[in-house]
Length: 166
Image (cartoon, rainbow, N blue to C red):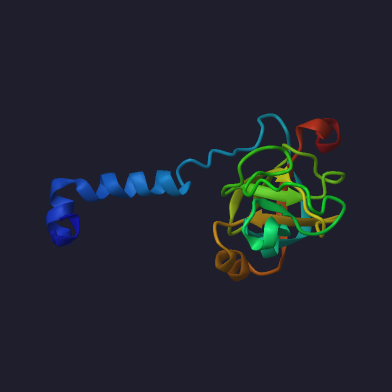
């Protein structure tokens, strides 16, 4: 029924703005409230930035029991162990703003501003993410591929090394 209304009618009665706002909230655009900590100056660094999603290829998981069982880690030291799809190494649910990093360089909780992506927080790590590399979460494999591999100047806020940032 909604689709049968003309756009001019929908806008005139005010349904479109409401549905647009709800759509932004449900997709996470309006819900991403990551902001840098107050009183901490950012460091600026050039890093390599890539994208990832929750798929098997990006997150190294497979189905056990001939492809019909629950997901398990497909390689590395945890091969065969249960895998919770969409849950980060820090225990949060992956969403827009989730960043995977080398936690010996950028610990969990570090806020980063990435041009073209916005603010994110380090909540995950990955086997191939070492040194000055960041991996940004995307809702689909296609979106992660579309982001590609970029060298970008980012701003980093890390409360734990506040003394070094001032």
